[in-house]
Length: 292
Image (cartoon, rainbow, N blue to C red; front, side, top):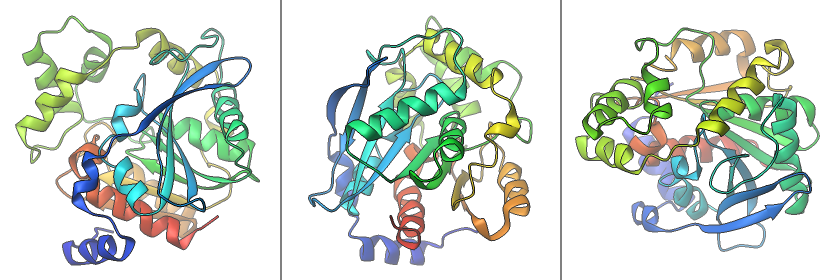
């Protein structure tokens, strides 16, 4: 379904989300989980009863993928903790021989340190795979899963190697980064300034990205793809070439009422940066329907 502008405005008003929330900054923390130390970014609602959302970025990505949508979720009354996975932004831990089960265990260890017996889970792009693995391995801990720009079923519509080059080659000229970002991550409707900002601020964590890819290859698809048995939300950009919306349509057919599919117009693979208000509204509506 596509959220209409009227319904979005109404939802944001009811949830208390205001556009100036995007200026809010998160708080950086380090969490020792024993076998690793992970850096996290927290955005917290001003309430001790705020429900917890744990979130994972995409392939080799850091918390900045959530920088525009996270403050809006906090304004709506949630506590969001974005986890920089092993090898990213100072996070430590073994990178060899991992599986998605190992990465899911890291998330549970963070939840344990935060004293959270039960929480909402979100995964952006590659992060959705670990999120689904987590819900499969720990069904009693994960209330529901939000999948942002999740693909993997239908082949990407980009040229082979374009995204890998963007995310893996820090020596690319700035103009080439912008071109590849536009091709692989952003809608044609997105303002050039946002694409250029992304390219300018793009960080590179090649070892972590490689380890995540290996963890994915080391884990059979059937072990994680269903994402447990709880409620699922898929938020997709209508113009996403990296994870085409056909992925969501197939998932909806497979999982029926268990899965809520929201397609956002004029958004690509980076929809949380392009359309933070619409993305936040979809997540908030889903979480209100599936509270802890």
